[in-house]
Each structure stands twice: as structure tokens, then as C-alpha cells.
Image 1 (cartoon, one colour):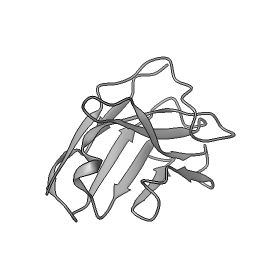
Image 2 (cartoon, helix red, strand yellow):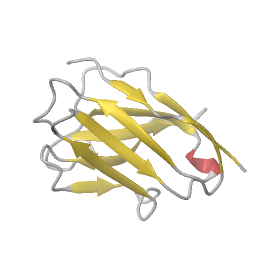
Image 3 (cartoon, helix red, strand yellow):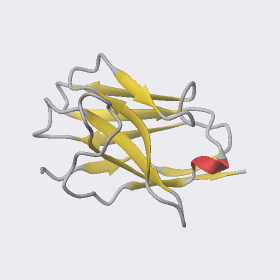
Length: 120
């Protein structure tokens, strides 16, 4: 698996927005997803997108607030996060997902992720 590089995290206040990016060079024809892991919790699925960007899938916690997209020409997958809440505080990771469900992890390993911290 090609290394994945997540970026765009930071410290924001509740209600603000952030856009995360994931460089996916070499994985242009793969379905990709975003996951997150909060302190003391297991890693969980957030959003997934198929190889051409025409199908997406979201966790209930992300619906209506987050948008996953991809720029095929730039080999990048994005996660636009709006109306952020303190519960969204976590390390966010991107990785391969199953092409049928768009939510099942199919990668070999995890990158370093990008920290998102939402203050109340």
C-alpha cells in the first residue's frame, strides 16, 4: 500500500469548519474513506467515496455536516467538516475502503493521521 498523508487538522471552536486532505498518489482507482479515533475510543468510520467520486457513504454522526470528495487529477481526497462539535475531536485518518460498502477498511496499515480538536 502506498503511504497516505493526511493534513488539514487543527484547533477550532465549536461551530467552525475544517477541510482535511489526503494525498492518495497511486490509489486513484480505489475507493477511499475517512476514519477517526478519539482518545480512549476505537477507530470509527466517518465517510467513504468510490473511485470516481459518484458514490458516497457517511456515518450517522457525519451526515448533514461532513462532505467527502475527491479530485482525481490532484490525487487527493477531501473531508469538508462543518458545524464541528467537541465530540468530533479525534485523530482523522484516510485509507482504502471496500468498494461495495464504502465503509469497511481495506488497507494494510494506517498513516499518522491529522489531529482535529474542537473546543466548546
